[in-house]
Image 1 (cartoon, rainbow, N blue to C red):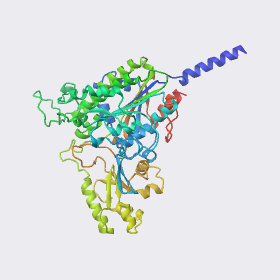
Image 2: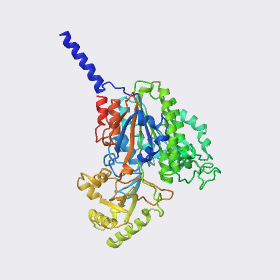
Image 3: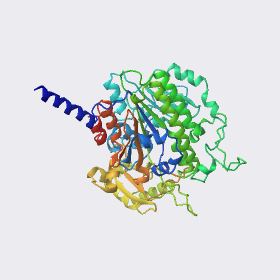
Length: 536
């Protein structure tokens, strides 16, 4: 009998060792989101990365090499909502920065809230909150599971990024006020700025970045990209076009390295003041580096500016991870996650003698409106165009006794004739059936009936919308927009390459499983299989 007991105990020990049961669960999960990070640019520059920055993830962590957003609307608001809720836009409802309320015909801003006020901001940027978020995030589940003993803190340069990632229940959501360069939050989160944030703002750290020239961090031979707009490698230091922020020109800080440095500096304050990871309750820290995305959009992902931002981001991550682990005290108690909100197209004018054509939204609206007016009568048929969604004037159609589905189909037929448009589906199409594969499925996954447009369009490969100071963009159903890095390091994880396809909606579900809390309520997928085995 004793012999059998010994055999059973030995079997149990072997099983624990081989299955990973009891793998270290973190006391702090840190989500690093680097905006607009294309996998190909990331890989191209890897030889110049530090050993404890990006390469720490790549060489010592769990790398998901085939991670994708499984929907078309790859704008930052929609993707950040997916990576925090575990759902596609069709479930979480964040289809973009704005949409049309079909009952009133008015435009609704995702973060707009007339009853809200932010602290220390200019009047036009103060009225924001999370009231239009629909489903809970991973952070919300952590707060529920720990009865608010655990902490969930979100830091981002961009207000939309902060609010979307911050979720519905967190009281610690901070962003940079573009007009003043100060850190702020809304009264919908807290009754006032924490005193430590006020003290930090009063020290005017933002002023140290004003007027700084953007000088490359490495010598010229290090860079793979040679095209530059702001940076000039000439020894004379002359610039093609100066974008140096001047007095009170704090908005420009977010399109320079300063935007990411300001976020990193504030994160260090958060670690100290919020005492994250120092007790037995699991904490979550969300950090979004929006400046990387803004720079890639403005100068192009192939530009010297974007490459220099990547090297600087490598330095920032190295310093931040070391700092955070030092603060927590035990490195294996921290799990770091690295990913991006989306990839990006090539620059419309990169590598070609004649720039690629761009989709002229203003002209498109005029022509479509003219067609609808000529066909049906009436005047203002196009209420809004946003994030590849076209919102028709349904109230006018109703008043004229028209069937809205028929009007949508008529408009779709005309829209498909435009150069640059590859696909168009109506809301009637998207609500009327299930698309199992191909472009229809991706578009349907991005469709939320109460907020998406009457028509949803996709542009041809490498086509982007014609906007001032935008050379590259996202928002399509192509791999260059949907494929993003996803890596985990810390908690004594062994290096691992996961080649199976991963849906980015699996990220918060996987983190919930690792932390031992309930998955987000609207999550539509299961955790990544590797972690399921590791932590079961």
